[in-house]
Length: 505
Image (cartoon, rainbow, N blue to C red; front, side, top):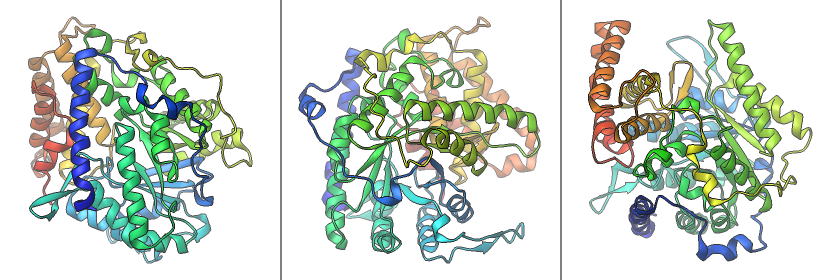
């Protein structure tokens, strides 16, 4: 895989940089003129295999042993087994995650936690979620595996190990090697994945079309190429998913030179009902159903509290409203981050689907989205707030600290956060400083103000957890890294690149 496909991967990464430079010059994106014939053509993706026809609730999470059992048992139809944003890529996490999936398919994963004495055991096969595995994005390398003096792309390590060991095993179980493809920025990147699938199926001797891939539309450039992405993967396409935080991160990254009209307010103020987000989710449903593909909605990241029943009630109502809206809009399923949310999301989709496995027959021909609507950030009334800056610093430090200790999915302030959270947090800090945002309290977003808030947060964490725990953690390192990627004049393409240099293991 590395010898055959990494050179093309390198060309596509260079193309990302060229496109980003073009957006910096023009502050503009449009549907591609060269691929109009694809958008106007009469074609469909391959029909969904039985194991992926009903995807009304999907649970996401890393591939540690406990999560593997809990996710498979959760009652969700699909488990997104995550080697990407919910996993810090220590070599141990990368390899043990693969071993845990093999053990689950071989039904030898049951175990008792020596710390708590609690036992974890898989339910009968017909009650288990179908696994859709997410490899790392194209930009990440795997330094522990080098060929001819250079690291193999993490995406090829994750995909290659999983496919080689499990493709035939999964076929015997009545399923198949199914994948989520993250951080895709163009249909040419989808074409590369398709070439990898064709080669790999021939290599291990399984029929073409056994692989199925769902592509996350979590970059602003991909939102303009949804039909083309499905077309490139059409024999292997299973659907598209509406990514949430990474989508905002991508808008900031690409339009960071675009001036005030592209400045996002606090991340929690940018709900899925914001006009530019409605435009992209409506377009996604219409595109998928026109082409016979599944449309999968976004993440409910709430973690239920064992202590605060009132907080749970309020959060559950918000989750229900979110999932009711997605089911009503025509999505075929949606994501949750915690098993307790599975029944809530399930009820929303059951109410609309009933016995039907999906609602691909809802073509949403009422939807028409103009190119400008997808980037109409200034259609929002909300503005950045001082508290929003403080929250971005708080969450950024806390997430990066856990990531540097090898944890990729982290509960922070009642939400399950992953790397996309840290990306939007540091991007917003960067954007607000560079745009000279003035907050409601009269303070201006500056590097000095950010340093002052970060120092205060670090002191508060030290007081909260005590000297011993503080010293045992990676708090100062996380603080320094957050400030580096938030304040550097040169905006780092991905926080995980400098962070990976500091990841031990």
